[in-house]
Length: 274
Image (tube, rainbow, N blue to C red; front, side, top):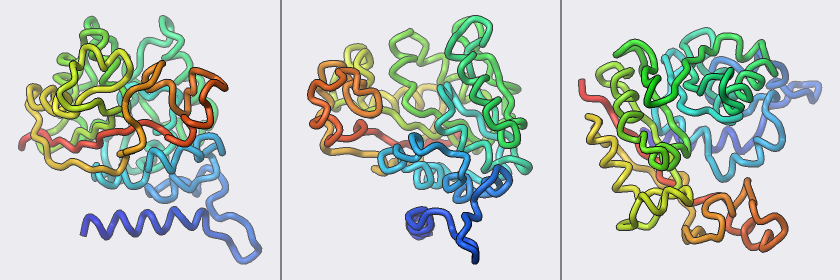
């Protein structure tokens, strides 16, 4: 059943937005992007630049694997410029709740950038709540047992680099209801590598991430290779940022790195025991 659902999502999204009888796009406008994962991914509110990342990030398949449903309360960790927010927010709008965990906008350009993003589409993002999250001083993601799902995309290496990983995973565990889901996507290092070293380049061994989550109390439910990339050997001059979309080396080796695509990534679904 799970594989069938992913196939249906992939086929639907591969066809793009459906056309009306007069040739228009029935996904146009903020309202048509709400109510389902498929509509949010296909919505016209998404920029061409962001859509170009879909073949590497597989947002519909990834969020379906995590078990996202419109009525859920979802906490998104470190949403950055809002790439996943623009899919999560419309999906749960009017039925569930999206809470974005960000640094204090008054003290952080990162947090300020996200608040500016929310103002870009007020019809879609007006319901998004924010929680100021900044370990070690601010480590609450909300009331204990209040969320159905927590998702984190490509952030664990940063928490390791700042010595915060254990406290962050503990905070994610606390905010989830019993039976709630933690979904993790993270750049994947070679197994057996030292995470203290590889995290500086953006990569983390999969077993280490699993260990972090299990130490916090989570149970690994399932792994997926949705976001795997065998062309990525995890060894680049500027770490993961050598690859798209960062392309930190500019034109140097650009064709080679674009041919590799985005990084090799683990996709893990954990559950808080009931």
